Length: 207
Image (cartoon, rainbow, N blue to C red):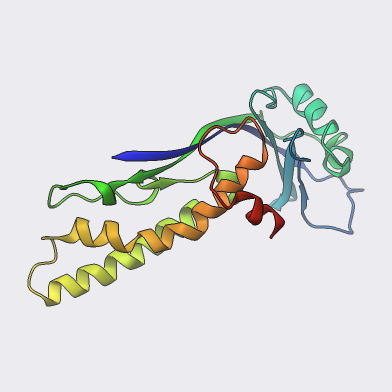
């Protein structure tokens, strides 16, 4: 199928720390955003069971965190605000640094194909894969599953739940994808993002 892509070259790293006895008590979680269009570095830190923090930091287009604890701390220190670094700089890391790379968001236009085989149906990331930072992928996949259930029930009542399933699903899933995909297009706020900017992008930014 044809694809629409948004090239973000995202890289992020996660490390788990023991929460110090003198940890701040005026917040439970922290989110630090970059400063578009030139600073893409951001971070997120949340508590885990067992009195632990999970800290994730990341950036785009080559400005990504290294895989060692010392480099992780140095990268965190350069975030836009010092909250995460101040919290973990004296905390004990409980394991190594896990890194992940995500090159691009992808929307595959199965709805534009002339034909599709019966008995086969892509779903979830196989249809539309989102920048994981926005936390949309599993929610959208769950909505797709609910839609699939409704279509199967309808087609089953008509006599055959497989014939025409792909065509119906690819058509009806499009409105479901529009809103989360429009969120993914916000990545164009960074000038190195690859792909075709939506015509109404500046309006979206003002909104």
